[in-house]
Image (cartoon, rainbow, N blue to C red):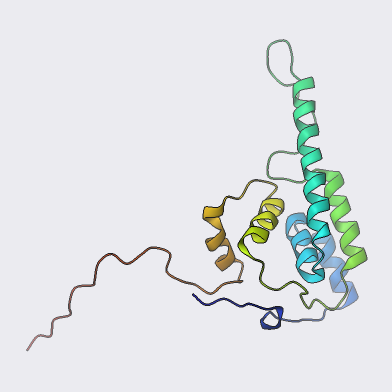
Length: 163
């Protein structure tokens, strides 16, 4: 397995202020939040937005219960579907990105360890990401180079040379 252990192996890039603002306005909120955490290295953002998402989930549950009719159906209470951030959280992510992201996008956080990455992935997707997916997600997000995930149990057949 080959990993990239430090932020020095990650790309550094500068962008124009206009392009940064456009990107903040158009970015998917979960990815934008992970970019903020990775670029600033501020893990307090992770704690803060995890708590905000947990509160939104609790409110969604309360709203769903309050919206139940006497027939057991829900009345369509306004709540974000699972896997999405509520509108107020999206607005807060974008506002915070405007405050903390600069045109120097050099990451302060290197390759996150498995537990930190699991927390980040769970927050990014607004859903639970279990440990079994972490190796694949680390590879797919470019933090780890590809490696065999399935153990080799058989040797390939010998090649025959015809004379």
